[in-house]
Amino acid sequence: MSNFFNTVSVYMISGFVASIISSIMILLINYIKKRNEKKYDYLKNKVLLDLFRENYEKQILGLENRMSNNIGRWKDTNHLLLSSIKDNIYNQNLYSAEKIHLSRFLSSAGLKQEDLMIDKKFVFVLTPYNDIFYDTYLTIQNVSSSVGLRCTRGDEEFISSDILTHILKQILKASVIIANIEGRNPNVFYELGISHALDKTTILITRSIDELPIDIKTKRIILYKDQKDLKETLAKEYIKIFSDMEK
Image (spheres, rainbow, N blue to C red):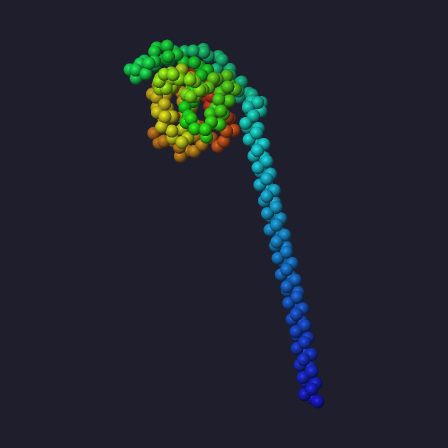
């Protein structure tokens, strides 16, 4: 009889312990489940927030690009700067004769003495004619136009004669030479070398300092991040140039 009660007690205790263990396991499983759900909700919310932020930043970038590409808007925000440049330009004589010697090189290219006359309102752009640089050229053209300067590049006119003769005439005629050296185009560097040899006022533009050859010696270098940055920096550079010309 005693053994019977002992056996029953053992089963009862074992059942009680098993019940407690089961309850603990259920509580633990529920805890882990809730913790995972919270973690899932956190990750889901984080992904949604990241997507929202990315979309928001894209919208801001789009608005900034539209504003920076709107030349009318850019003029409104920079009207004092533009007026200062225009005053400097209009106060100077339109044409002047530089003391450039009509060398054998220039003569052999078909240039004459009258080709040495400089148009103070003319800017000539040395640039690769690849489409990827066209937006940059348009930015230069828009900024130049907004301050009263006429701007062209070498392929905008029909040329029936030697292309080098045409380029040389444009370089000699220009008050300022702007060279886009991005891409290290050999024609651009050749024409830039001629411009330096003729002692022309030159501005170099590039997106990266890595694009600058070590032997280019000039203070007129514009490093820019985007078209908006180029607009603002080029306008300031024009002020420096035409202020120096008045001295």
